[in-house]
Length: 262
Image 1 (cartoon, rainbow, N blue to C red):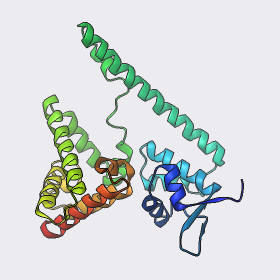
Image 2 (image 1 turned 45 degrees about the vertical axis):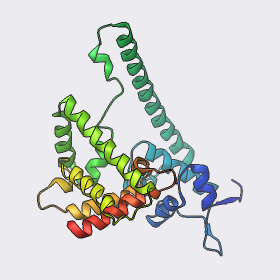
Image 3 (image 1 turned 30 degrees about the horizontal axis):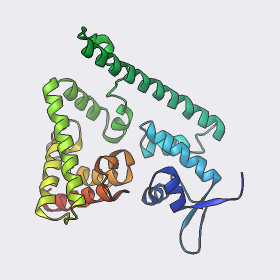
């Protein structure tokens, strides 16, 4: 490897992430900069870039930050970087195969609908798996949380699932509109969306917010922080300003609502 390094802004741009996310990775000990310049800017060498690539690959596979830290822990690692990346590559190919199966499944359904043919139910859901984040949910909130939410989801009718998805979509739309409108997170408009968001959260069985007398406030505050730190969730509130602006607005509005009402 060469002796070159890159600034945090350069790495954020190249990796399609944000400086805030990279600083968060540093704060939690997941990705340390190779050096800090006199102006306080973090810089990353080639070794750090390889580690960041592994982190982003694992995030794409649905792992949470604690799980990633465990995977990358030197005391647990018995593989070289090259060997570890080969493992990641194999997992990515599995994901690629799953997506290819989904595409083929949807294309088959479209062809059947266009041709007036009978739908083959056993072929319509190949590659779909709503349990793919099971491990992360169980790690965050326990096995019972996943079991309760999974039972709730499976027990829904198609109409109920459609209504629930629409509710999520409406929340995301209204959050983005509020953030792009430049209103104060403490305003009545923003706080009304925050109230709806909390009501939505408390309606999902298995989460701490749904347990009577549970730590609802802590759960809401924790999720607000996660929306900013985790690009998978922050993407739901992305605004035209880019970065984590939208997620930060949601976090701030939820924090104000929680402090005043929970």
